Image (tube, rainbow, N blue to C red; front, side, top):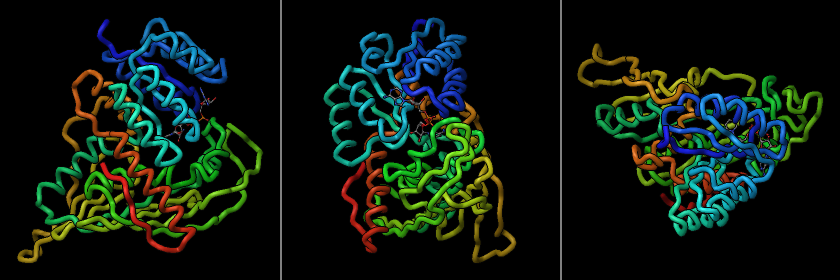
Length: 368
Ligand SMILES: NC(=O)c1ccc[n+]([C@@H]2O[C@H](COP(=O)([O-])OP(=O)(O)OC[C@H]3O[C@@H](n4cnc5c(N)ncnc54)[C@H](O)[C@@H]3O)[C@@H](O)[C@H]2O)c1
Protein backbone atom coordinates (compact mmCIF):
# COMPACT_ATOMS: atom_id res chain seq x y z
CA UNK A 1 0.00 0.00 0.00
CA UNK A 2 2.90 2.35 -0.80
CA UNK A 3 0.62 4.84 -2.50
CA UNK A 4 -1.51 5.51 0.55
CA UNK A 5 -1.72 9.21 1.52
CA UNK A 6 0.29 9.64 4.73
CA UNK A 7 -1.35 11.84 7.38
CA UNK A 8 -0.40 13.51 10.65
CA UNK A 9 -3.23 13.99 13.15
CA UNK A 10 -2.56 17.06 15.31
CA UNK A 11 -4.84 17.52 18.32
CA UNK A 12 -5.84 14.13 19.72
CA UNK A 13 -8.91 15.09 21.74
CA UNK A 14 -12.62 14.35 21.63
CA UNK A 15 -13.26 14.64 17.90
CA UNK A 16 -10.08 12.74 17.01
CA UNK A 17 -11.09 9.64 18.98
CA UNK A 18 -14.84 10.01 18.46
CA UNK A 19 -14.88 10.59 14.71
CA UNK A 20 -11.64 11.22 12.79
CA UNK A 21 -9.68 8.11 13.74
CA UNK A 22 -12.67 5.75 13.15
CA UNK A 23 -13.23 7.48 9.78
CA UNK A 24 -9.55 7.26 8.85
CA UNK A 25 -9.70 3.55 9.64
CA UNK A 26 -12.54 3.27 7.09
CA UNK A 27 -10.19 4.98 4.62
CA UNK A 28 -7.37 2.54 5.41
CA UNK A 29 -7.02 1.40 1.77
CA UNK A 30 -6.20 4.89 0.54
CA UNK A 31 -4.58 6.62 3.51
CA UNK A 32 -2.67 5.91 6.70
CA UNK A 33 -1.62 7.82 9.80
CA UNK A 34 2.13 8.12 10.21
CA UNK A 35 2.25 10.73 13.02
CA UNK A 36 0.08 11.93 15.89
CA UNK A 37 0.67 15.06 17.97
CA UNK A 38 -0.91 16.47 21.11
CA UNK A 39 0.37 18.68 23.94
CA UNK A 40 -0.68 15.77 26.14
CA UNK A 41 1.80 12.95 25.43
CA UNK A 42 -0.63 10.26 26.67
CA UNK A 43 -3.30 11.29 24.15
CA UNK A 44 -0.77 11.47 21.31
CA UNK A 45 0.48 7.97 22.21
CA UNK A 46 -3.05 6.53 22.48
CA UNK A 47 -3.92 7.95 19.06
CA UNK A 48 -0.70 6.48 17.63
CA UNK A 49 -1.47 3.06 19.13
CA UNK A 50 -5.02 3.10 17.80
CA UNK A 51 -4.14 4.22 14.28
CA UNK A 52 -1.15 1.85 14.20
CA UNK A 53 -3.67 -1.01 13.93
CA UNK A 54 -4.42 -0.11 10.31
CA UNK A 55 -1.53 2.22 9.49
CA UNK A 56 1.62 0.38 10.56
CA UNK A 57 4.38 2.44 12.19
CA UNK A 58 3.00 5.67 13.78
CA UNK A 59 5.23 8.09 15.72
CA UNK A 60 3.79 10.38 18.41
CA UNK A 61 4.88 13.95 19.25
CA UNK A 62 3.99 16.66 21.75
CA UNK A 63 5.19 19.54 19.58
CA UNK A 64 3.95 20.41 16.09
CA UNK A 65 7.36 21.78 15.07
CA UNK A 66 9.09 18.49 15.91
CA UNK A 67 6.31 16.56 14.19
CA UNK A 68 6.71 18.64 11.02
CA UNK A 69 10.50 18.25 11.11
CA UNK A 70 10.12 14.49 10.74
CA UNK A 71 8.78 15.15 7.21
CA UNK A 72 7.08 11.82 7.38
CA UNK A 73 3.64 12.68 5.91
CA UNK A 74 1.87 14.35 2.98
CA UNK A 75 -1.02 16.01 4.80
CA UNK A 76 -1.83 17.26 8.28
CA UNK A 77 -5.28 17.12 9.89
CA UNK A 78 -5.64 20.00 12.35
CA UNK A 79 -7.93 19.00 15.23
CA UNK A 80 -6.67 21.44 17.85
CA UNK A 81 -9.20 23.78 19.56
CA UNK A 82 -10.58 26.56 17.31
CA UNK A 83 -8.38 29.44 18.54
CA UNK A 84 -5.20 27.39 17.77
CA UNK A 85 -6.17 26.46 14.20
CA UNK A 86 -4.42 29.31 12.30
CA UNK A 87 -1.09 28.89 14.12
CA UNK A 88 -0.91 25.14 13.53
CA UNK A 89 -2.13 25.45 9.92
CA UNK A 90 0.41 28.21 9.21
CA UNK A 91 3.28 26.14 10.58
CA UNK A 92 2.26 23.13 8.48
CA UNK A 93 1.81 25.07 5.22
CA UNK A 94 5.13 26.87 5.79
CA UNK A 95 6.75 23.44 6.07
CA UNK A 96 5.21 22.45 2.72
CA UNK A 97 2.50 20.13 4.04
CA UNK A 98 -1.12 19.98 2.75
CA UNK A 99 -3.68 20.83 5.48
CA UNK A 100 -7.22 19.87 6.38
CA UNK A 101 -8.41 22.09 9.25
CA UNK A 102 -11.37 21.68 11.54
CA UNK A 103 -13.57 24.78 11.60
CA UNK A 104 -13.04 27.66 11.92
CA UNK A 105 -10.19 28.16 9.45
CA UNK A 106 -8.91 31.17 11.42
CA UNK A 107 -9.93 33.72 14.03
CA UNK A 108 -10.16 36.70 11.66
CA UNK A 109 -10.50 37.37 7.92
CA UNK A 110 -6.94 38.77 7.49
CA UNK A 111 -5.62 35.65 9.24
CA UNK A 112 -7.71 33.38 6.94
CA UNK A 113 -6.59 35.28 3.85
CA UNK A 114 -2.94 35.03 4.89
CA UNK A 115 -3.32 31.24 5.14
CA UNK A 116 -4.96 31.09 1.70
CA UNK A 117 -2.07 33.12 0.24
CA UNK A 118 0.52 30.94 1.95
CA UNK A 119 -1.12 27.77 0.59
CA UNK A 120 -1.03 29.25 -2.93
CA UNK A 121 2.57 30.39 -2.58
CA UNK A 122 3.61 26.93 -1.39
CA UNK A 123 1.39 25.11 -3.92
CA UNK A 124 -0.31 23.17 -1.14
CA UNK A 125 -3.94 22.16 -0.63
CA UNK A 126 -5.79 23.88 2.22
CA UNK A 127 -9.27 22.50 2.94
CA UNK A 128 -11.59 23.17 5.85
CA UNK A 129 -14.48 21.50 7.73
CA UNK A 130 -17.44 21.24 7.94
CA UNK A 131 -18.00 18.61 5.28
CA UNK A 132 -21.76 19.24 4.84
CA UNK A 133 -21.46 19.99 1.13
CA UNK A 134 -19.61 16.79 0.15
CA UNK A 135 -22.13 14.42 1.75
CA UNK A 136 -24.31 12.38 -0.60
CA UNK A 137 -27.32 13.80 1.22
CA UNK A 138 -26.43 17.40 0.40
CA UNK A 139 -25.36 16.50 -3.15
CA UNK A 140 -28.86 15.01 -3.57
CA UNK A 141 -30.44 18.28 -2.34
CA UNK A 142 -28.26 20.25 -4.78
CA UNK A 143 -29.22 17.92 -7.65
CA UNK A 144 -32.94 18.18 -6.85
CA UNK A 145 -32.82 21.97 -6.65
CA UNK A 146 -30.61 22.43 -9.72
CA UNK A 147 -32.73 20.04 -11.82
CA UNK A 148 -35.41 22.74 -11.93
CA UNK A 149 -38.16 20.24 -11.03
CA UNK A 150 -39.09 22.40 -8.03
CA UNK A 151 -38.78 25.72 -9.83
CA UNK A 152 -36.39 28.38 -8.59
CA UNK A 153 -34.96 28.35 -5.05
CA UNK A 154 -35.93 31.53 -3.19
CA UNK A 155 -35.54 30.90 0.54
CA UNK A 156 -33.47 28.62 2.78
CA UNK A 157 -34.26 28.23 6.48
CA UNK A 158 -32.17 26.33 9.00
CA UNK A 159 -31.74 25.52 12.63
CA UNK A 160 -28.73 23.96 14.32
CA UNK A 161 -28.91 24.21 18.10
CA UNK A 162 -28.14 22.30 21.26
CA UNK A 163 -26.97 23.08 24.80
CA UNK A 164 -23.39 23.00 23.47
CA UNK A 165 -20.55 20.82 24.78
CA UNK A 166 -21.12 21.84 28.44
CA UNK A 167 -24.45 20.00 28.36
CA UNK A 168 -23.11 16.98 26.46
CA UNK A 169 -22.44 14.30 29.08
CA UNK A 170 -20.28 12.19 26.77
CA UNK A 171 -17.98 15.07 25.72
CA UNK A 172 -14.37 14.48 26.84
CA UNK A 173 -12.79 17.85 25.88
CA UNK A 174 -12.84 21.19 27.67
CA UNK A 175 -16.17 22.90 26.86
CA UNK A 176 -15.10 26.38 28.05
CA UNK A 177 -13.55 27.66 24.74
CA UNK A 178 -16.89 26.99 22.99
CA UNK A 179 -18.61 29.66 25.16
CA UNK A 180 -15.86 32.26 24.54
CA UNK A 181 -16.04 35.13 22.00
CA UNK A 182 -13.70 33.13 19.69
CA UNK A 183 -16.26 30.34 19.14
CA UNK A 184 -19.98 30.41 20.17
CA UNK A 185 -22.84 28.60 18.43
CA UNK A 186 -22.45 30.24 15.00
CA UNK A 187 -18.86 29.06 14.56
CA UNK A 188 -19.45 25.67 16.16
CA UNK A 189 -22.90 24.69 14.83
CA UNK A 190 -24.22 27.38 12.47
CA UNK A 191 -21.33 26.88 10.03
CA UNK A 192 -22.68 23.46 8.95
CA UNK A 193 -25.76 25.17 7.54
CA UNK A 194 -24.01 28.35 6.37
CA UNK A 195 -21.81 26.18 4.12
CA UNK A 196 -24.93 24.47 2.77
CA UNK A 197 -26.79 27.75 2.20
CA UNK A 198 -23.87 29.39 0.40
CA UNK A 199 -23.15 26.27 -1.67
CA UNK A 200 -26.64 26.67 -3.21
CA UNK A 201 -27.00 30.45 -3.38
CA UNK A 202 -23.30 31.40 -3.74
CA UNK A 203 -21.65 34.18 -1.73
CA UNK A 204 -24.00 36.27 0.44
CA UNK A 205 -24.23 40.04 0.08
CA UNK A 206 -25.43 41.11 3.53
CA UNK A 207 -25.95 39.71 7.01
CA UNK A 208 -28.12 40.93 9.85
CA UNK A 209 -28.32 39.21 13.19
CA UNK A 210 -29.48 39.52 16.74
CA UNK A 211 -28.19 37.67 19.72
CA UNK A 212 -28.53 37.31 23.44
CA UNK A 213 -26.98 35.43 26.33
CA UNK A 214 -29.92 33.30 27.44
CA UNK A 215 -28.18 31.19 30.12
CA UNK A 216 -25.16 33.14 31.46
CA UNK A 217 -23.68 30.39 33.64
CA UNK A 218 -23.42 26.73 32.76
CA UNK A 219 -23.04 23.73 34.98
CA UNK A 220 -20.70 21.50 33.03
CA UNK A 221 -22.05 17.99 32.60
CA UNK A 222 -19.33 16.72 30.26
CA UNK A 223 -16.44 14.52 31.40
CA UNK A 224 -13.80 17.05 30.23
CA UNK A 225 -14.50 19.48 33.08
CA UNK A 226 -17.15 17.87 35.23
CA UNK A 227 -18.69 19.79 38.15
CA UNK A 228 -17.31 23.19 37.00
CA UNK A 229 -19.50 26.20 36.37
CA UNK A 230 -18.47 28.31 33.37
CA UNK A 231 -19.41 31.84 32.32
CA UNK A 232 -20.98 32.25 28.89
CA UNK A 233 -19.03 35.08 27.22
CA UNK A 234 -20.66 35.10 23.80
CA UNK A 235 -24.26 35.11 22.46
CA UNK A 236 -25.73 31.68 23.08
CA UNK A 237 -28.89 32.42 21.04
CA UNK A 238 -28.23 33.85 17.55
CA UNK A 239 -30.87 34.63 14.89
CA UNK A 240 -29.33 35.46 11.54
CA UNK A 241 -30.60 36.56 8.13
CA UNK A 242 -28.70 36.59 4.84
CA UNK A 243 -29.36 38.36 1.56
CA UNK A 244 -28.10 36.82 -1.69
CA UNK A 245 -28.35 38.19 -5.24
CA UNK A 246 -31.22 35.73 -5.87
CA UNK A 247 -32.54 34.58 -2.55
CA UNK A 248 -32.72 34.89 1.22
CA UNK A 249 -31.77 32.67 4.13
CA UNK A 250 -32.53 32.53 7.80
CA UNK A 251 -30.64 30.62 10.49
CA UNK A 252 -31.29 29.94 14.17
CA UNK A 253 -28.25 28.68 16.02
CA UNK A 254 -27.95 28.29 19.76
CA UNK A 255 -26.16 26.74 22.71
CA UNK A 256 -29.29 27.23 24.84
CA UNK A 257 -31.85 24.94 23.18
CA UNK A 258 -32.58 21.74 25.12
CA UNK A 259 -34.18 19.87 22.23
CA UNK A 260 -35.89 20.56 18.92
CA UNK A 261 -37.82 18.70 16.26
CA UNK A 262 -37.50 21.47 13.67
CA UNK A 263 -35.87 20.38 10.40
CA UNK A 264 -32.14 21.09 10.11
CA UNK A 265 -32.53 22.89 6.80
CA UNK A 266 -35.25 23.47 4.22
CA UNK A 267 -34.88 24.83 0.70
CA UNK A 268 -38.05 26.51 -0.57
CA UNK A 269 -38.49 26.85 -4.32
CA UNK A 270 -41.27 28.34 -6.44
CA UNK A 271 -42.72 24.85 -7.17
CA UNK A 272 -41.84 22.89 -4.05
CA UNK A 273 -39.57 22.39 -1.06
CA UNK A 274 -36.81 20.07 0.17
CA UNK A 275 -36.66 19.33 3.89
CA UNK A 276 -33.59 17.85 5.60
CA UNK A 277 -34.39 16.51 9.06
CA UNK A 278 -32.21 16.87 12.16
CA UNK A 279 -32.59 13.14 12.73
CA UNK A 280 -29.69 11.58 10.90
CA UNK A 281 -27.97 14.96 10.47
CA UNK A 282 -24.53 13.37 10.86
CA UNK A 283 -25.45 10.47 8.55
CA UNK A 284 -24.02 11.57 5.16
CA UNK A 285 -26.31 9.18 3.30
CA UNK A 286 -29.64 9.84 5.09
CA UNK A 287 -32.80 10.54 3.10
CA UNK A 288 -34.51 13.89 2.49
CA UNK A 289 -38.20 14.83 2.10
CA UNK A 290 -39.35 16.49 -1.09
CA UNK A 291 -42.64 18.34 -1.62
CA UNK A 292 -43.78 19.06 -5.18
CA UNK A 293 -46.69 21.38 -5.78
CA UNK A 294 -48.79 21.38 -8.92
CA UNK A 295 -51.29 24.17 -9.51
CA UNK A 296 -53.08 22.18 -12.24
CA UNK A 297 -53.46 18.87 -10.42
CA UNK A 298 -53.90 18.81 -6.65
CA UNK A 299 -53.68 14.97 -6.66
CA UNK A 300 -50.13 15.23 -7.99
CA UNK A 301 -49.08 17.38 -5.02
CA UNK A 302 -47.46 15.93 -1.93
CA UNK A 303 -44.39 14.70 -0.08
CA UNK A 304 -42.03 11.93 -1.19
CA UNK A 305 -38.81 10.57 0.31
CA UNK A 306 -35.54 10.49 -1.66
CA UNK A 307 -32.44 8.58 -0.57
CA UNK A 308 -28.91 8.93 -2.00
CA UNK A 309 -28.25 5.96 -4.28
CA UNK A 310 -24.61 5.22 -3.42
CA UNK A 311 -23.16 5.23 0.11
CA UNK A 312 -20.16 7.47 0.84
CA UNK A 313 -16.64 6.37 1.77
CA UNK A 314 -17.29 6.87 5.51
CA UNK A 315 -20.42 6.71 7.64
CA UNK A 316 -20.51 10.15 9.24
CA UNK A 317 -20.62 13.73 8.02
CA UNK A 318 -17.50 14.83 9.92
CA UNK A 319 -15.43 11.97 8.48
CA UNK A 320 -16.40 13.01 4.96
CA UNK A 321 -13.94 15.91 5.46
CA UNK A 322 -10.76 13.82 5.64
CA UNK A 323 -12.26 11.46 3.01
CA UNK A 324 -12.55 14.41 0.61
CA UNK A 325 -9.05 15.66 1.58
CA UNK A 326 -7.50 12.26 0.80
CA UNK A 327 -9.47 11.95 -2.46
CA UNK A 328 -8.24 15.42 -3.55
CA UNK A 329 -4.63 14.51 -2.72
CA UNK A 330 -5.07 11.35 -4.82
CA UNK A 331 -6.47 13.49 -7.71
CA UNK A 332 -9.77 11.60 -7.47
CA UNK A 333 -11.92 14.63 -6.53
CA UNK A 334 -11.82 18.37 -7.20
CA UNK A 335 -11.60 20.48 -4.02
CA UNK A 336 -15.06 21.47 -2.74
CA UNK A 337 -14.32 22.26 0.92
CA UNK A 338 -12.14 25.17 -0.12
CA UNK A 339 -10.48 27.64 2.23
CA UNK A 340 -12.03 30.48 0.20
CA UNK A 341 -15.53 29.14 0.95
CA UNK A 342 -14.61 28.67 4.63
CA UNK A 343 -13.27 32.24 4.71
CA UNK A 344 -16.59 33.58 3.36
CA UNK A 345 -18.56 31.61 5.97
CA UNK A 346 -16.15 32.87 8.65
CA UNK A 347 -16.87 36.43 7.50
CA UNK A 348 -20.64 35.78 7.78
CA UNK A 349 -20.16 34.45 11.33
CA UNK A 350 -17.90 37.31 12.45
CA UNK A 351 -20.05 40.01 10.82
CA UNK A 352 -23.19 38.43 12.33
CA UNK A 353 -21.73 38.94 15.79
CA UNK A 354 -20.92 42.57 14.90
CA UNK A 355 -24.37 43.05 13.40
CA UNK A 356 -26.02 41.73 16.56
CA UNK A 357 -23.98 44.14 18.67
CA UNK A 358 -24.56 47.12 16.31
CA UNK A 359 -28.23 46.41 15.58
CA UNK A 360 -27.97 46.82 11.79
CA UNK A 361 -27.28 44.79 8.63
CA UNK A 362 -23.66 44.62 7.42
CA UNK A 363 -22.27 44.16 3.91
CA UNK A 364 -20.01 41.19 3.20
CA UNK A 365 -16.83 41.56 1.16
CA UNK A 366 -15.33 38.12 0.66
CA UNK A 367 -16.32 35.74 -2.10
CA UNK A 368 -15.43 32.24 -3.28
N1 LIG B 1 -15.87 17.07 19.53
C1 LIG B 1 -16.63 17.03 18.47
O1 LIG B 1 -17.57 16.23 18.37
C2 LIG B 1 -16.36 17.97 17.33
C3 LIG B 1 -17.20 17.88 16.20
C4 LIG B 1 -16.92 18.69 15.09
C5 LIG B 1 -15.86 19.54 15.13
N2 LIG B 1 -15.07 19.64 16.24
C6 LIG B 1 -13.94 20.58 16.21
O2 LIG B 1 -12.72 19.87 16.40
C7 LIG B 1 -11.77 20.70 17.07
C8 LIG B 1 -11.28 19.99 18.31
O3 LIG B 1 -12.39 19.77 19.15
P1 LIG B 1 -12.38 18.66 20.30
O4 LIG B 1 -13.77 18.57 20.76
O5 LIG B 1 -11.67 17.44 19.86
O6 LIG B 1 -11.50 19.43 21.41
P2 LIG B 1 -10.61 18.78 22.57
O7 LIG B 1 -10.35 19.87 23.52
O8 LIG B 1 -11.23 17.52 23.05
O9 LIG B 1 -9.27 18.35 21.80
C9 LIG B 1 -8.30 19.25 21.36
C10 LIG B 1 -6.92 18.60 21.58
O10 LIG B 1 -5.95 19.44 20.97
C11 LIG B 1 -4.80 19.44 21.81
N3 LIG B 1 -4.02 20.64 21.51
C12 LIG B 1 -4.30 21.94 21.82
N4 LIG B 1 -3.36 22.76 21.29
C13 LIG B 1 -2.47 21.96 20.62
C14 LIG B 1 -1.29 22.20 19.89
N5 LIG B 1 -0.84 23.45 19.70
N6 LIG B 1 -0.62 21.17 19.37
C15 LIG B 1 -1.07 19.89 19.54
N7 LIG B 1 -2.20 19.60 20.24
C16 LIG B 1 -2.89 20.61 20.76
C17 LIG B 1 -5.37 19.41 23.22
O11 LIG B 1 -4.41 18.94 24.15
C18 LIG B 1 -6.55 18.45 23.05
O12 LIG B 1 -6.19 17.10 23.29
C19 LIG B 1 -12.50 22.02 17.37
O13 LIG B 1 -12.21 22.94 16.36
C20 LIG B 1 -13.98 21.63 17.31
O14 LIG B 1 -14.81 22.72 16.92
C21 LIG B 1 -15.30 18.86 17.34
